[in-house]
Length: 213
Image 1: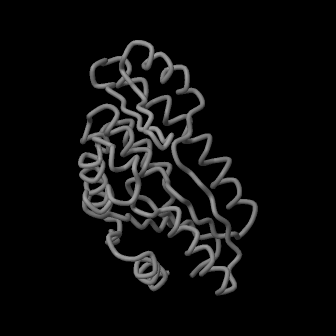
Image 2: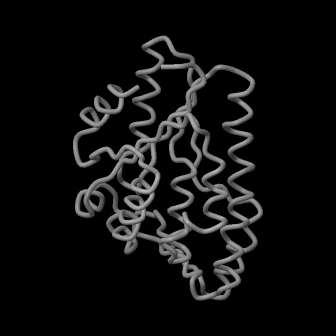
């Protein structure tokens, strides 16, 4: 594997992204590679005020479970302005996070970065929040795709709805799980990303990922 590689583990909640990212990091270090773990989930900076406003006017909600975990929903498709503005603000937020956490560190050293979540996850979030399955084909969607380096190696962890719901109570309660699975499949097919069957044991999933790098 070449130096300064960018490896991303993406997929819906409950797929085991963090577990696989940590296992892969350990694997790479055992092979003698200089690498680091980087969480690159949803980054909200400029978009925070918009999210707060959306909640005030009823376009988003957060449900708290008995365990204390929270499940959030956005209904931005009800507002043309917010469904247009949110992706743009999140694009800037994502750019800031990407430059500071990925692009700049890669420029400064030959360290391989293992990302737990990446720009693909942010795009699925936008597709879900705005009810816009065709988002990757939009102008803003194409700008998101331009942020992704050519040498990115992404693994999309996917499992059936029943399996995902059985792993965490917040996933079990999440009404949007079917849509999330569908949107990840859209992203994976359009961008020709490698899909990994995440219904198996963590060890089996790791072996498949490790064998490809």
